[in-house]
Length: 124
Image 1: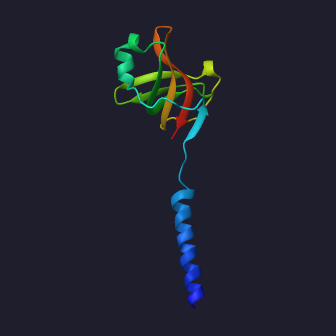
Image 2: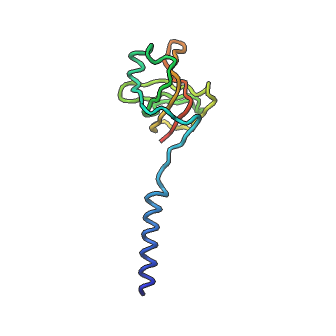
Image 3: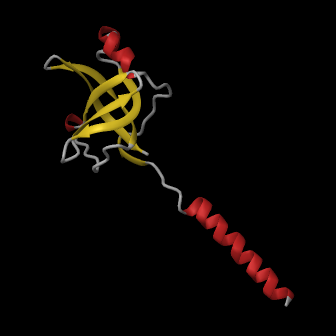
């Protein structure tokens, strides 16, 4: 009887640990690792582009629109939204509209549109 109780207790503890840690959704990474520690608000880039053009930034927010093939997306935070172009880095991400994402890349002004040339992306 005591062995059965111990066995059942271990089974319950193991199952609970598996559910808590084994089924958690992990972030997916694409391209280069994200190394910037500070997230730059998108509104800061949009309101003062000359300060950021040519510099590497880390931006975070929700994907609100995206390329069907995964080569670009628009990322929105509380301060604005920005185009993230993955084509120059030969990166593609799966369909992730509505998901939170972090992107790192160089700010460019291409075709009169500010964008981040994405070098690395994490989907959450």
